[in-house]
Length: 124
Image 1 (cartoon, rainbow, N blue to C red):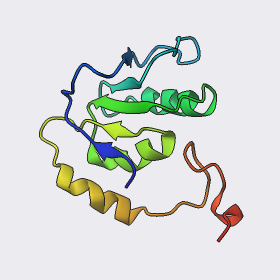
Image 2: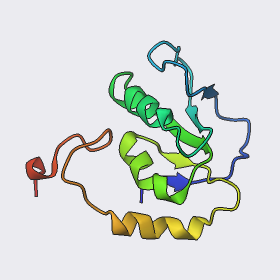
Image 3: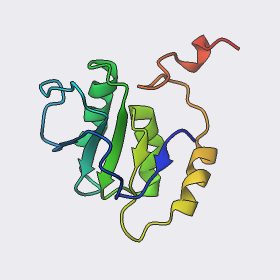
């Protein structure tokens, strides 16, 4: 599992950009930004998935992309595939359930924001 679960509170070291889920990630300046926090205000709002893909693929952002808000364990695998590197689970969700999701969905046929090559093109 590459995606890490973290606590919402961290030290003031990182230069953080909190991006609203209706903001266009192609229009924001990223100079000096270490981490971008993308919000999931509710389970049915997945715009942050698209923002993460745009930040990784088009903007070539190599820093931490963090999922915040109503983040559920069921979403973690897809978050990782879209380019998220850390996530803060919603209150009351058990982080111990996360590894099982990654074991259940260990490989994918198609490429994604992290591994661009489809499975049939991977070098063994």
